[in-house]
Image (tube, rainbow, N blue to C red; front, side):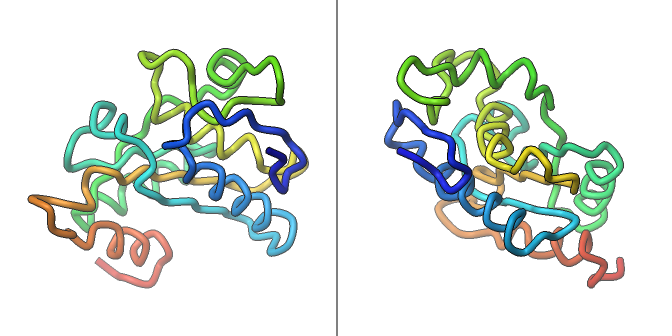
Length: 166
């Protein structure tokens, strides 16, 4: 399929559909809305719980200072986040190589930082001239406990956005 970014994607995992929508979302935000910071946040991967545990969402960011601000906001609010490996130059060519498209939608190597890889898939659809900050939060595990929603993330966003003063 061809996404809004113009890149083609081989769908090798139909359960990894959310990242296709998020990829179009970040591209749209960057090209139409043109913000200085783009945040995508989703219950994206089952791998998140392996990467950061049940209580911490996975945080992937292209700016170390912004990453630290989100980390601090998480500590302050109790909506905990923890940084995961940021290394698009390593993950993108290895994880998503396709013979029929620009990339696959899911990494072939199931042992290779899948939460990071999923985030980098989304990031790959930002325009190459996008100079802003990008934050990806994979909140698959902390949003639910014993089959009930926790409300995780609301306070984090309010704090990170400067609305909540704690």
